[in-house]
Amino acid sequence: MSLSSSFTDFSLAELFQLMDQGRKSGCLTVCTLPDIKTPESRAKYFYIWFRSGRIVAAAHRLNGKGLVSKIAQRNWIEPSAIETVYRNASTTTPLGLQFKTQSLLSAEQLNLLFASQLQQVRQLFEIQKGVFKLDCKATLPMSEMTGLSLSATEVTLMALRALKNWQALEEALPDIKSGIRNINQNQPQIRLNAFEWQIWEFASGDISIEDIAAQLNQPSIKVQQAAFRLMLVGLMEEVPQVTSNSNEYHYDMDLTWVSKYGSRAARKNQESQAPQVSNSLLQNLVGYLRSKA
Amino acid sequence: MTSEILRIVVTGGVGAGKTTFIRTISEIDVVDTDKRATDELAELKETTTVALDFGKLTIASNQSLHLYGTPGQSRFDFMWEILIKKAHAYILLVDAHRPNHFRYARKLLNYMRHHNNSIPALIGVTHTDCADAWEIEDIALALGLQDEASPIPLITVNANERESVFQALIAIVQQLASMHSPQGVRE
Image (cartoon, rainbow over all chains, first blue to last red; front, side):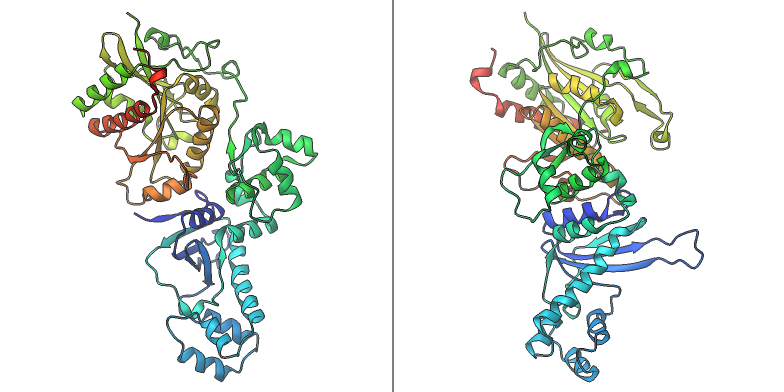
């Protein structure tokens, strides 16, 4: 069994939520599919390494030289010094930390290098078509690591706040007819922006997104996007609402056959709860099922 | 003598195995309203349940189990409301090799929990033998079931096998029995 799919079926945002909540480790390979309308377009690969749900490194290649390449591009260190540290690097300590230990890089420079890796990750959220696969057994590449990490959820939140093209996530957004329900009894630990706070205040589960949008005088899509972000950070869930009745449907919904077998499920004006069943029924049923299993 | 009926709703996305689940163990020919799918679902499944499936097991002269399979299409969501209000428990079937259905399954789960959180639930993971099937623990995460005080159990279900279906039913009926308070028992 594997953890693999296409972004059409399971978005990168949802995948990052899963990685974070599942405290996943390993190497995530992302492959962007070539554009069939552009002949010279080719598949591109990108690799992201996770430790316990946190992103620790990202690179375009697997040769272990992505980080030193970034350092060299910035002319922060003499090429010969880079080569010496790289050649003699420990295999148990992130390479970025080794440069810092030797006073060749500052903490600020390490932050900038890690931010550059994360920027590449954030760009992946713009991908319209691609596939992914997680290798949970992959070892972490010390040569690509700065020693810094950030939770996948926080990366997602930052990426989605800046995302311009939401086309790839259209199917993942909560429906405008749905409500949103707060699933976190405590105040959010993650830093929300003012609009996200406003949406969070409406998370009772009974007010539809389109009604929230109307009350806030905002476009529904903006509320959908903010609600989606709050869903991904584990603060709320989408609750589908029943917005129509059977009369609006054109199918022949004759449920009288249900009554024939003793059910009253098709009747509209019933008591709201199912009647209690006796222990006798439950015990007899378990016995019956066991005898058949 | 008053007749007693235990009602279990079997829900899930298109192709998860709801109709098969009920058909595998029902003592009556499953009453279904399968009609030929006319939209994009036609490629996935030749027919799809547009109303609901109904199956039955008679336990004693006055005791029976009724199984109700929900439609696989979200536009029939009003039917969930009718069913979930009358249900004693529900089983959510999730197809392990169709990640594109996890989102819908999660919505169904949220709907059920929001509208009737007091009844037992079971998640039956189907098609686990497919090459690209996800691990059960990853499916649980995709459904938003992490770190819960009272997590919903997930088990593997083969909707074509009687034993597997019976095991799923035993699991949920036992859950129901364990929740049953003496005050609520009608002997």
